[in-house]
Amino acid sequence: MTSEDKQILDRINEYADKVLKDFDPQKTRVSFQLEKIKPVMEEIAAEKGTTVEEIFIRYMDLASEVTVDKNTKFQNTIGNMTKYGDVNDV
Image 1 (tube, one colour):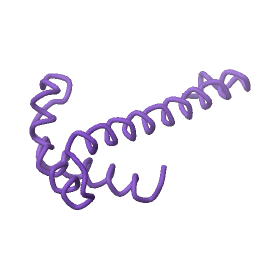
Image 2 (cartoon, rainbow, N blue to C red):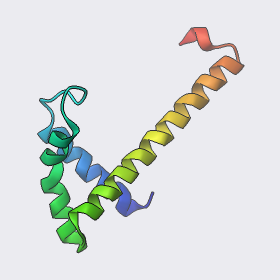
Image 3 (cartoon, helix red, strand yellow):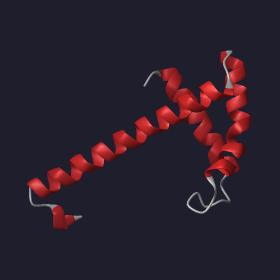
């Protein structure tokens, strides 16, 4: 992930935290959540000279990358705990 990618991801996530703070993400339609964060994506698209769709795709790719990285680290931690017999220490 480039520094520009990280800035975009952080900016959208910070905005989402503000505008979606009162909503349970598990109970809120994804389309509603996307509509709420659309303004920041429009700003970024205008700054980058690209489309909102391109920013959305980039955001989704970056968010997926972060999720995969976190899951891999978690799996490695669990694997190491099992390997060394520490699983009951969790």
